[in-house]
Image 1 (cartoon, rainbow, N blue to C red):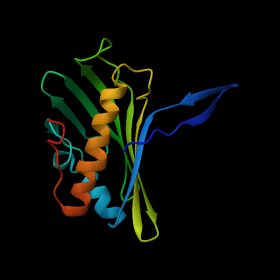
Image 2: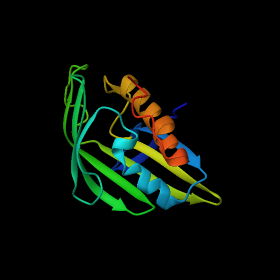
Image 3: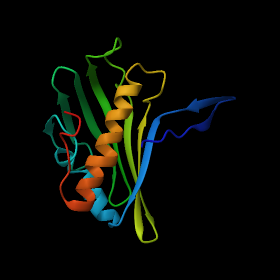
Image 4: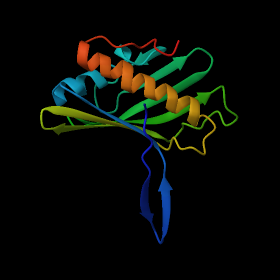
Length: 163
């Protein structure tokens, strides 16, 4: 079940609650294996994928029918530790503000935790105030905690899990 983690961040002299969608899981694989699986986007995220997600600066688009289009740029790529995608374009057909995702960041933090590797996924900027929060956080929960986890642990993801 996805978890929401609320963090309070200092921003100038006011506290701003950051309620970005976050979910975490652990696996019996190495940080390198986890990192490689995350970057095999086609292996775990369903829909139409075009482009590349293997090196810094790469860009790819994701399309799910007429409901979702987004373009991501790889802005951080630290082997075995961190992957960050910046959403540079978005068109979500099922919400009023079609560009809700634009400017948000999708992050994967990988940490060695003894005999396990922890994956912390955060969609920075996907907050409960967004109309798509319920549907998007539910979909991310399935893709990350089921499909990506399966790709990491068995070598086979479930990219069509939300079809």
